[in-house]
Length: 465
Image (cartoon, rainbow, N blue to C red; front, side, top):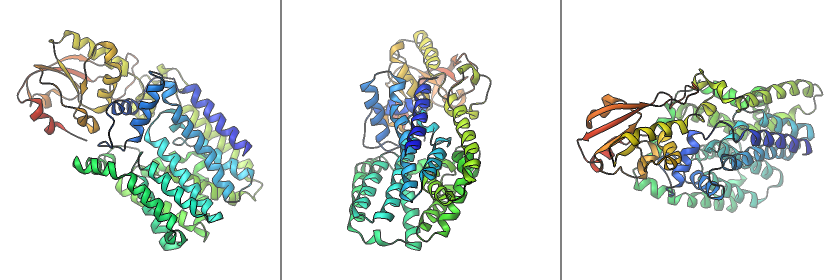
């Protein structure tokens, strides 16, 4: 494990050195805003990430580097646990290092440690679950099945995608075995704990009309390069051939066939239900480890693997914010969404603050979508802005705007706003000053007056996911 620890340490150092670059990502700001409204669940997520972000911000107020330390820890932990999966499979040091290198070279699993979002936490927990499954195959300890339930209970507080993971694994186990866990009281006790842990969130969802169910269509409708492109890009240059070989070896192995089958079943579910190939990244490590162990006997592997590993790591480095922020200028945000959407939020707050100072006294502020609302909630108080509201996603649940005579509306269109106000005029345009074409660049700020209905009546009709 020594070399795997070195790889994990190198990734951790790289993430630490870049953690304070550019600024907060839009999702991080949203988790911060949600953390100011702690609840058992939210319209678009379980409660753990907002709670974690609030804890970090309470311990280290205003520190971007500190906020991202948990993400760094989860990414580093993913490398170490992945190497442990290879070791549980009987892999030598070479197999463990190869598996660890695949994680370090994965654009999703490695760069996920740069920002604190659900992806890095969820992927780490899936890797832990696969390690527990592989270890159980070797030692057949009932306590491991209980730990599977406990880990799943935590994963359910991060993202509900783990439910589909277990549906895929359960079907694969029924079809191909081993069926012994299904007869174990430890397994069902763990499953009961996982279900019970979700009861408060389920009650919240039921009380609020099950908004999480509507998120599936929203996520499926998001534009991306395509399922298979994202799947392969998430694996990295080294990870793609190792994933394919590991899948082939798993399907040929009676003992590990259920893992290969579960990956394929989950792939079909994700393809039709969500369409985002990177959702499968948490299952990569089991197949990487199986492939690495199977390749261990071939001496030529090291000569073929290391160039691929170096290229994979180079790709990860390029994706991280190692270049000056000016390098993002005049590039489409989709070229690197994480970096592009970590720029411009203070400038948005400056623009809205200037418009607010020129607006009538008591003007309220509403943002069309949840990222600008979160950015204004975070950066606004120091600029003299009042509480911000938004009808979008989980932010709609944080409160209804006050019945003010005038409203600054950030984003949206004049035609849409004219349906609800007598007078709508644009008073500012957001400019990040860097030429970075992200979601906030060029965003209009409208002064809306003569609202035709009270917010209490209008707000429910504006809600959107």
